[in-house]
Image (cartoon, rainbow, N blue to C red):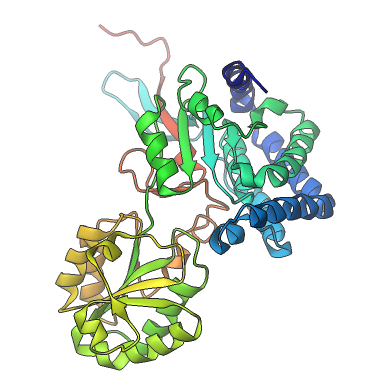
Length: 419
């Protein structure tokens, strides 16, 4: 494919045309497409697994690390998850066309707001081929057309999944161009996609920090993004230590290569000696490298010295930074200074402190006595998510159906004219 610009322009034109059809589609048609795609995935499990194995084999030959390979793998459970995600999105309330805040004005007209699709959404992502289904399902249900550009390392997997999506759209008699998967691995395609404001209304990047920074810097289309997932768990001196142990272990070791994994553990000084040795032993058994401040290393012999860089690093690996802090004030200050406004949690039995933590930590998800691993659209009842946004405008946190829509004013009259 030599003319990348022409190819991407064609995708854009087709997407814009399809966006009008999908915006006008009824909920029943959209749900039928989702259910038919789920059926197609179920029928194509073997071919999807085979395509994914091709990608995994190539990834190992190309030196992908274990975290990337974990993201790339489509296990039977993850295929089950894709199918379940489609059915859950189909079961969700359709936000399109919903009218809210309808009220009479003194003139006699009624004024309200109607929820409508954004239009065409470009999604750029790395490794995880299940994002193809998550993105397609959410864009489809919210009435948007989408152009999906997955990573070259997942090319075969994404093509196999795209075939299932096309089958689902065809069964519902919806335009195939409502969901288009970019077929070229040429990186120039990304540059074209993010600079087509005539055809693309918003870009959502999912991937490493360097990718997202590049897109945010170069895009002429609005971007919904997060750069880092530097997530914290703070164990308060009023915490239930058994809860603190299980929450911390889950937040770090459930999966290492995900953006909601804990990267820094903060521990109140009065209970550091009671909880840190136990955690250090369990984390060590799982092969997690510990990097600690001076007070941490006084309690945990195996911890290596932490540097300032550790407080601002998203490891996506079995590495954990640990800091012993004086109290909750110091914990909140640390999070708001070094965090990435993604997800942060407190473990405490003190209700007042929990409320303060919720109010004062400036992140898109803030939790009390729960693992940061819950920061996920599926767990939040969104059915699936198209990404996590740390933006403060338009959408924040896991972005589901409502985050992929906007509102327009609607006015009802009965021959009313303005004097």
